[in-house]
Length: 353
Image (cartoon, rainbow, N blue to C red; front, top):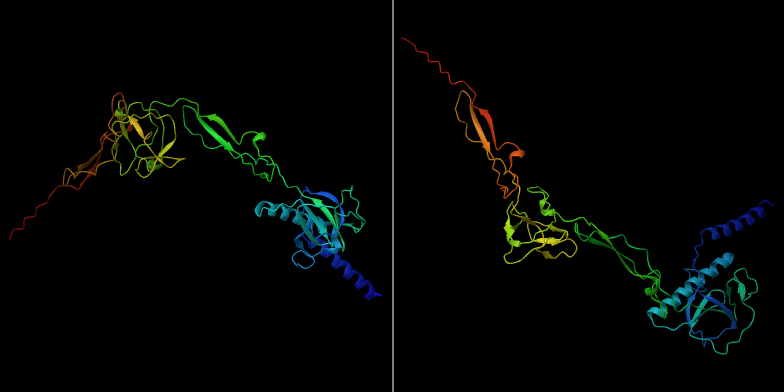
């Protein structure tokens, strides 16, 4: 009695484990039931899947309902892919002998019969929602969806503003890939635009470029602003703290388009990565002055009794121009420190012999 009980539970456990660990495909059913027919290799001539001999997806007799749906999902997808990639013209797929899938273009003079089964091994009824399979001599036909209308993907995030002032635009996009149109399916043009724009940074540009002079990060600094006359400007792309003159004969108009100075080269557009001459300029008529770096300390003014050492800096980096501010609010231009503070007193001892 105990041995019989154990054997029953052993097979029950095997069945449960098979159901738990079986992996069956699930899809939206966009194929349509047609009916049960006598098998015909004249019209449905290409075998796409044969799970009776393949071991990757063996027929799951214990969970045949889920298996049959998985088989139809795989067969339908394979037929659509072959239509797209190999220019096949499949319109129908069929399930034969519980685990075989065939595909073909059309059915002419097919003989409709009974004998197909549902996933629960019941007699198939065409008007019911249950999927059906053919047995040894019959096949169940489905019409596949050969044309798929396209649908838009989600919107991308908005791009960075094209200008930092004077009104730029931000752009976001979406693509007709959810799903992509197939066959005679419609594209997405009736579903709205694929690009959207919105205004940004509408505040007026200042009359001067914005920059951090003599800053370690100046080689990647953003420059914006308006410059109407090239002759009033010098280019300030930094390389070893040097300034290059602006190109002669070219008029510049900084309109807020964001560009960067990179490694002392020409200004380079962030988006196109192409050299531009529209930025990294500073009006010369009105420029604030900045101090140079400190000089080294001078030699001590005395060798003993306390002297001073001096270091200086000048308001030349750059020098102020026009109504630009000088460097007086940036601290002193001279610093002193004491040096050689030892006494100069010399004691002379005379020894009389």
